[in-house]
Image (cartoon, rainbow, N blue to C red; front, side, top):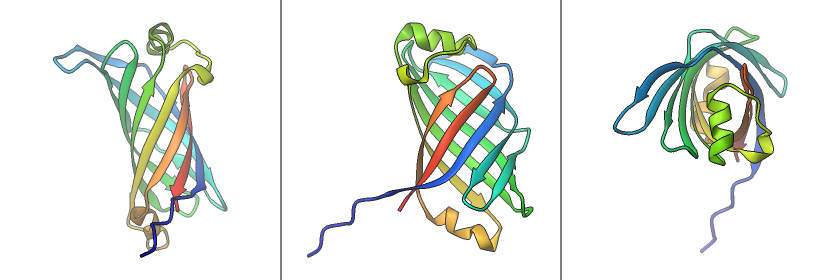
Length: 155
């Protein structure tokens, strides 16, 4: 019997998402809830580009002073006019003092923060249907006004 093939990472896209001011829900039973509006952005893949449409949001749960669980949902429109729904779940963690700086919107050295994500995609485009049938992983960096990520297909 053959062993499963280990997954390989194949670069899919570089994504930059512009974000607005946090809308604070406050401390709940599960942690501190926040909503970060998505204002726009862009994505670049191999042979294609897309724009991130305004109107999405990153739903955040600050579980502790060291850990944030993120759930971003937004739309991208490709240069060919195809629409892609993106749901990107992520974990961001680091030393409490640096995480507090991120929450305040201050710059932090990305090497000091663990930011990994698991994006998934849905589209009505027959040419892009394959992206709904694959798994993806990525890493990110939070800047005061945007989030920059690299997405990889698990091939």
